[in-house]
Amino acid sequence: MKLNELTEKAHAHKIDEIVIESTEGDIFTLNVTSEGDTDTLLNEDGTILTPQSLNAAKTLLRDIGGMENVPLYFKHSVTHDEMMGSSAESADDRMSITLEGQDR
Image (cartoon, rainbow, N blue to C red; front, side, top):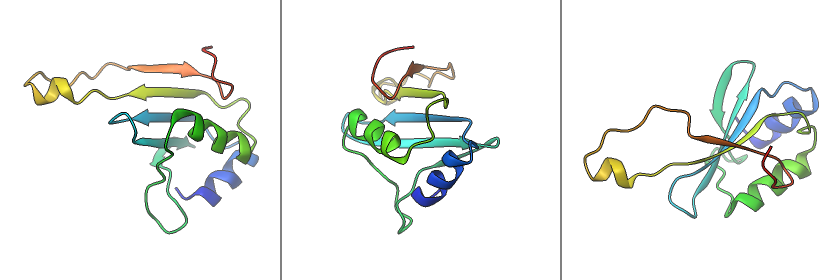
């Protein structure tokens, strides 16, 4: 999903949830679920949008508007366990957050 599509869907109240995921400490992506489909947020040129911090991602969402009632989660993936031979966990390891940065 491109940024302009997210803006349109947010203002039409068609966003189910957003997961901000940190994969390697300084690499963040946004996974947007809208009407049951989950997509990674893209720049207008089709590349993956990668805010430089959790705060930058939340600022982007605040600036778009229409996100006041959208469930927002933070997920920190830990690749170390998989590299050491442990199996990947399938549990939901998301933490509920708000755009203001306080836990819900």
